[in-house]
Image 1 (tube, rainbow, N blue to C red):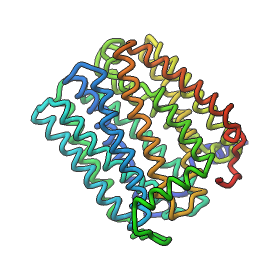
Image 2: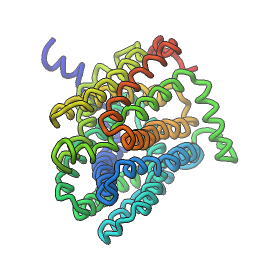
Image 3: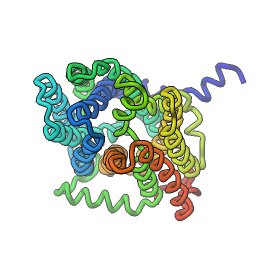
Image 4: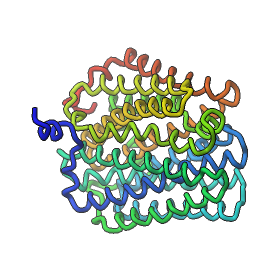
Length: 417
């Protein structure tokens, strides 16, 4: 096989970028992903600076959990009943305002952990609605044959932001005071305006199907549909287990300071998982050709858990980053399969609600994981909390596959049921 043929077969598929609306949204998402990662690192670092406690850092996840779950589900129902462009504009505006509030409180040096929790809760609710809607619009911007490629492009763009953002945040926060924190928030607010421009330029996307009179009834219908779609439900369960048990990010500020020499290392820890996801995304041409996607999904989650566990024992920063990158590559593979199933098999009138459930799992699981790992570390220490969680996630993935063999038998050609 020639080099050109190898690249075409294995490199990321960029065909969806031919569509102008998707291309603008992709660019806007790229800027917002990068800016958001600055805030995602700055918030836990600021909380640790104020409290000197990983438990308080873990409580950030708890503060964002319930708004994220509730507004993901409700926002998905609204996205199915209203013009998705307008829903995305409104929710993005609230997200921008919450980022500006974070910047203001840092500039004024309020140093209130409770205020920080409150702003994070508002930001999580806005993020939930905008993320569910942003994912649902993809199927209206590209043809069905390119949905998997469009999802991979979006995941790769988000992981590129998750690589560069934390590294930049590490530089901004190296001084160990709130000046760098405020600057990180400010840059995020500026970059988010590009995403707002991209959303403003989207075409109108009113509902295609019949709209019910009650959003709560629509929500119940979506959850009922999800409950009867067994394979999708199983992928949600296995992802919740992976994120709640094995994601160690609430420990990164503590471990960076105590094991790796200071807050300058925290950027590398926060970006490591995304580095692996980015590499996997760039070389993702083979992902769509895998038919036994159930086996691939379970294997990816097992690799994720074990790689995280070993990373928790690493005595050197470079080794911890490498192992977390392996975990990130596995996580990206499982995420693409789950997203593709939703966008391929769900009818358009259900996609907002199912994307809401997807966002609740994908973003809510890590926040619950922050609480789990922070609370456990307060009792057992950071290393036991980190390593034990990774091992537990791998074991749960295996047990789910054994208990529900339909997950292992699932192939890309199967209809949802």
